[in-house]
Length: 80
Image (cartoon, rainbow, N blue to C red; front, side):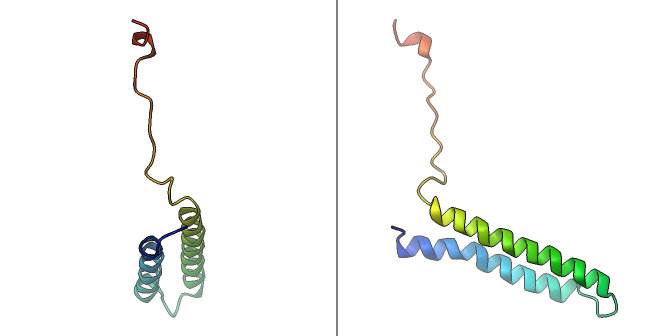
């Protein structure tokens, strides 16, 4: 089970992405350029959807993230 502190940490990344997406929309949207606004909306929507699925992956594998361990002993030296 995920502890409450881990849930809070996991939600932080999505909050940052949503905040940045809103600020980017305010900065880069152009009222006179409908095509550009559509492309911008699609890019931001794709980013937010990717963030959602990445968040789900991290939540499901919270114990595995950062836990890469490698066997570094030399097998030739084990017998002698």
